[in-house]
Every structure is written in C-alpha cells, then in structure tokens.
Length: 381
Ligand SMILES: C[S@@+](CC[C@H](N)C(=O)[O-])C[C@H]1O[C@@H](n2cnc3c(N)ncnc32)[C@H](O)[C@@H]1O
Image (cartoon, rainbow, N blue to C red; front, top):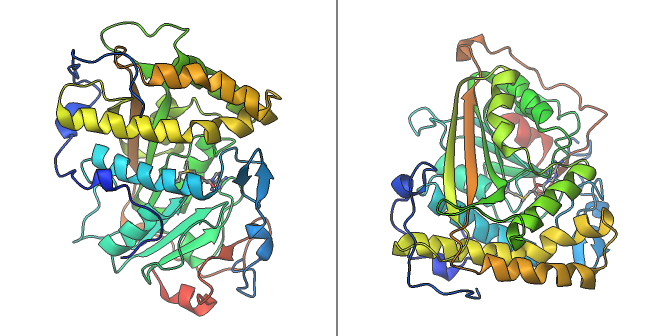
C-alpha cells in the first residue's frame, strides 16, 4: 500500500528482534567509549465533508485540530505528521515488528477493528492490509490521514471523550486499539470502560503507551536532569489542562476495574539516545533521540503557553538544557513503554445483535473518504 508522507530511510535496515533486550527486566549494557553530547454523523446524516474540520487553529507557528479546538495540546501539522509516522516505525521495531500483542490471528481475524486517536492512520492502514476481510475504523480529532487507503479502512473525525457513535459498526467490535494516547483523555478509565462496553464478548482491547519519565539503571537520575524536569513540567501542565500524561503505570488496573480478564502488561525500555553498546539498541536509541528532539518544541508549545503563560522564545530557551541532557550519552537514560491488553469475558456467541440505530446527538462523525456512503458502511463487518 503506497502511503503518503516520508518514511525514515534509516529505519530500513531493521530486521531483527528486540524481544529479549527490551523487556524492562533486561539489563542494557552501555557503550563505555561514549562522550557527552551527540546531536542528533454519521456521516453528518448527508455524508458530506465539513470544511470547518480543516480550519486548523494557528498558534506559535504550529497548527492544531479544529474539531473541539483547544482540547488536545499537540500539533497536527506536517512536521508532527512526519514525526508520528517515524514514531510508528520505531514502535514497530520495539514490538518486534508487531502492531499488537493481543492474540489476534489470520485464522481467526478480528472482523471489526477500532483504532481510537488513530493519528496519521499508519497503524490502521497496516491492520487493513494484514486483515483484508476485516473492517477497520480509525477516529481522530484531526483529518490528517491519507486519502489513499485500503478499501476496508475508514477514518472519521470524532472525539472519543464524547459518547461514541451508535450504529452497527460501533458495537460488537472484535478489537479496540489505542496507541500513544496519553494527553488525549480527560478520563482514560472511562474510555477503557466504553471500549469494554462496545466489544463483543471475547473481544480484545489494547493500549500501547509511553511513560513520561526517565529511568537509569546504573545511577540515579538527578531531579535537575533536563529531560526529567521537562517531563515533570509537561505532566504538571497536562494535568492542569485536564489531559493527564502521567497515568501510564495505572492502565492495567483500569482494564481490571473495567471488567477485562486475561489482562497482560508488558513493559519495554527505549534508550533515549545512542548510549547502549549493542549496535541495534544503540540505533534504536539514536532513532528515539531524534524523534523526541524533533517533537520537543511541538509537544511543549501549547501546554507551556496555554497553561504556564510562556512565550515561544521563553519555551525554546527552557528547552536548551533539555536537549543538552537528552544528548548526554554518559547518563544511560531510557523511557518505559507499556503495552496492556485484556479480553472481555464471555463467548462470541453471547453477542447481542445491534441493529444500526440513529446516530447519537452528542457526537459528530465526518467521513474522510468522500466516496463512502452509508450503504458502504452497512456492508462491512
Ligand atoms: C500522539 S498521537 C498518536 C496517534 C496514533 N495513535 C499513533 O500511535 O501514531 C495522538 C492522536 O490523538 C488524537 N486525539 C487527541 N484527543 C483525541 C480525542 N479526544 N478523540 C480522538 N482523537 C484524539 C490527536 O489528534 C492525535 O492525532
């Protein structure tokens, strides 16, 4: 499937497994030759596209989503789209070239797949290719997904904090996925509960989320460390803005509380620069370093401006030390990345048939594929 957007060529040489090295219990050996610092509607009833969703909000030289403007604090412009696409490739490397850890298979495919906060839609498109008989729906506040997608993949502008869409495609779902969505939800537990409700009995839900903190196994990360201070301030500001970032370690419990069974949690380590000795881990660290470095301004601007009242120049000055410490290979810092997945109890045959009902008046759905008609939707799943 040809995709829009740039793919990082540096990712092409990844053909190996990280499974052993990146489990959070594994020790990563540091390369001791390193020195300091290396740079790095329901279809709107009429199925018509609404121009206003493209009228992005401009602030400090970046653009932000128009639908429910102001509720999400990270940008949606080309720079961020490129970063998200690279992040997708890096996370695939981390997960050993897998898009999911839930036990899905070609012999028993998940026929209805929902990707909440799909971003550029890369994950959803790959799932559409992997499971050609499945219907894949991706939702997001921003219509930043490509137009050229597999026929079984559809994208909608929708806010998953609101009541979810009604209708057949939005019930008895086989698999619901969320990735890097901390900062999207006012209450992640409620999103997980909605997921539980919309899954068919026996269906799976999965969250793949970074933890916004820095760790180091061979010495303590000082509270003055630039990256640590940056994450601490980002977590504080995001909590003040009602979109908490610091919640990742509690996701497993949210699954259990929602009623999921067979709940698993796997925690990976992502080196934050090229400090590891093993070449493939070093390369992973270099790629993550570049991704964080490229995203740092965009991730910081809105939260620090809107919550802390800082100006762009002030924010950039505050990031100088963050960039410096991020590049310091003498501190063997890594980030944790959590994957949690759980099953809704029951047997698939217990699924209650849901006839396509009128759309909820609380949510609004705008199809990205102009050719998609309500009839098309009714045929899927
Ligand atoms: C960091 S990106 C991750 C995108 C994608 N899941 C991935 O892993 O590449 C988070 C996405 O969530 C979307 N988003 C934020 N709040 C949302 C909400 N309440 N409902 C739906 N999407 C949301 C943003 O527009 C953004 O595209």
